[in-house]
Image (cartoon, rainbow, N blue to C red):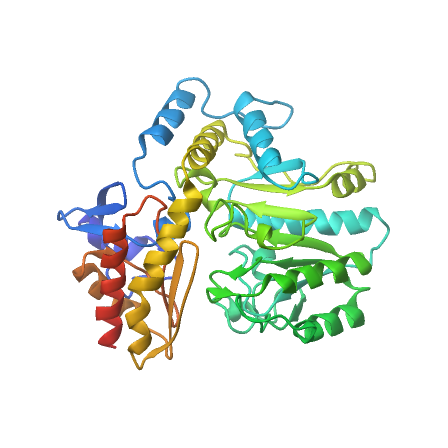
Length: 423
């Protein structure tokens, strides 16, 4: 059995069946913004490997950091031990986020970071004697990861996890903000969430949301004033506010963190994806002294979580190098350039009858269609046009590396127009 057939018969790929319904393309290498297939085909990557490879592939600075660290210390358990890469990375994260978020927990991935955040919030409420606060409030259209706790706060009806609806922990959902990013604000936009919280605040331990951008839940951009209103409600009713910035952190929306569009600092902040520049899997959860003190000073006098690969030195080294690299170049200008180029390049898609809406924010470009696409049919068409774009449901979108050129963005946009126009 050759490798292709073995893969098809034995290896599961994300959100796929066995065997996979569509083509699985074999990658031989990657450089800058390009994925190189084994047949020599080069594809401009519009996805930055699910939004993580912000500096492009094979970045020499990141590679050197990981190799140097590997020659010294590739891994050691974090239980009872510490090391310089973790300390340095924690210092960086504390410095670049709001001042009160000065406690750091390192995790393995975005989904695990969400699990950690939910457990922290629940253990905080238990420590405060609020044992009836056992539910998490989330938004319709939310996506927070693939593990059980994370999918329990994903949209139970309209997400990729709807198959598990009814058998997960019974959390609480409120309507997705109806105020789009550029809409004029009206306090009536808070009516639903206010009603839900006022009725059920005695049950609600925490409110988790993706600030400004709902990612895999629909690439939906909403008004920052919504979050300002939500913060006031959470403070009034002793609800822990969790921001999931795994997708939006480190410049993706045009701000270093999406929370900077608001006047709000959450009680818990989840980071991941772009933190290591896509070199290795890693995430972080930041919280306040209020949360950490309650958890640490009450039985069981410890936060009950500890991944085997927590604060892996290689991942820490990659994250340090990636953040250093990000802050040393004018990423704001580059993301703004990407935003403007996407706005211009995707404009022609608005003329297509199948297109419902085109929207752009920072280094995110979205073409929302009036019907769902068949991934196994549309993916090969993008490959034929020399680009790697992986739509889902009715969304054709790009979230490229920040180093992408205007010419490459235009090629991505042209491919989207040509492929979508044939649907």
